[in-house]
Length: 168
Ligand code: MAN
Ligand code: CA
Image (cartoon, rainbow, N blue to C red):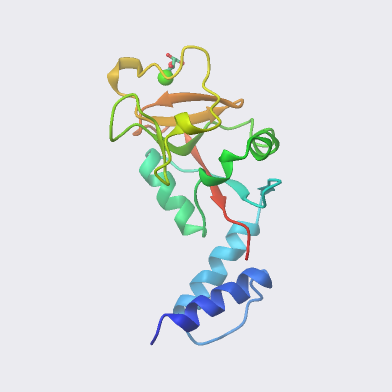
C-alpha cells in the first residue's frame, strides 16, 4: 500500500471532523478515534488556529509526549510563538500545571523548543527567579498560572499541554 492515499484520507477527516465510517483500513479507524478524542472535552483554539488540550497522566514529560501523540497532537510548542495565542489559551488552563515542549536537555541553561528553536529567540514568560535548575535536576518546563518554571522531567506532579496545528 502506498503512503499517499492515507495522507489524503487524513486530510478528509480533518476537514469533516472525522465522520465515523468504515473504510476497511485499520490505520484510518485509529486516526478517526484520535480525532474524536481530540475534540472531546476542553479544547481551546488560539488566534493562529492552533488548538490546545490538556492530557492528564503520570510519569513525567516523556509520558506526556506519548499521551499527546495518542490523541493526534503533539506537546505544545509551535503555536506559542504567537503571544496573543499563548495568553488566550493559557487563561483556560489555569487549574492544572502542565509540561510544554521546551527543555534544556541538550545543554544546561539553553532552553530549546521541541522544533529546535531556542526560547531566547522569541516570547518567554519565566516566573520570578526561573529557570533556577533547582537541585540541579530541572531540565523540563511547566506552565502554571501562565508562569514558566523549569522542573524535573520525571515527576508525577504534572500533566501535559498538547497542541494541534490548524487543519489545512
Ligand atoms: C519551587 C521553586 C521552583 C522549583 C520548584 C520545585 O517552586 O524553587 O524553581 O522548580 O520549587 O518543586
Ligand atoms: Ca525551577
